[in-house]
Amino acid sequence: AQSVSQHNHHVILSEAASLELGCNYSYGGTVNLFWYVQYPGQHLQLLLKYFSGDPLVKGIKGFEAEFIKSKFSFNLRKPSVQWSDTAEYFCAVSHLSGGYNKLIFGAGTRLAVHP
Amino acid sequence: DGGITQSPKYLFRKEGQNVTLSCEQNLNHDAMYWYRQDPGQGLRLIYYSQIVNDFQKGDIAEGYSVSREKKESFPLTVTSAQKNPTAFYLCASSIRDYTEAFFGQGTRLTVV
Image (tube, each protein chain N blue to C red):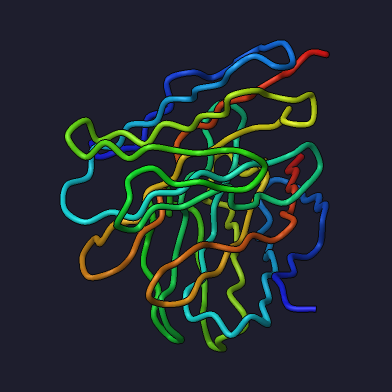
């Protein structure tokens, strides 16, 4: 079945550690790619997005992601995490299905950053 | 302020009753979505609508129904046929030629 896979369900890091969260998708054709973040008690909000062009995209709060088409991947990275990055992170893929744009999410990765 | 409003924030219902969750947006977006969020399963698409009077089933539409009579509104009815309705429900909207989705605060439904 076509899907969006996030490899890590829970990640625990110390402050200043580097972060990489994996995301793979299985849809062919043109896709738009997103990372969303959900801080405790808050709305889901967009971290970054990729539609076309430079496969390395930069988002808010120092996050970046790299689209590797050959690997169907869109991994999220941050060189040095902070305690305030503690949240749940969702990868999402938008693709055409039956003439309609569907937005499909991965299962999420819960990140805990310790001071 | 522009945004998406879901109401109520918390909802309790008895088993066997239908319940309707409200979603209103004033962003002038054409597309609207309903997702269900369960721990460890991420967001799963229930229904989506790209235009008024048209909607499509998502991956877990069984036991749910929607309507899209107005551009601003996309209510979701959780019917008694939904076997496990207790969950957190999120509504979202986006412009038709998709850029990013904006989410509401969510409704936590508990069926007892």
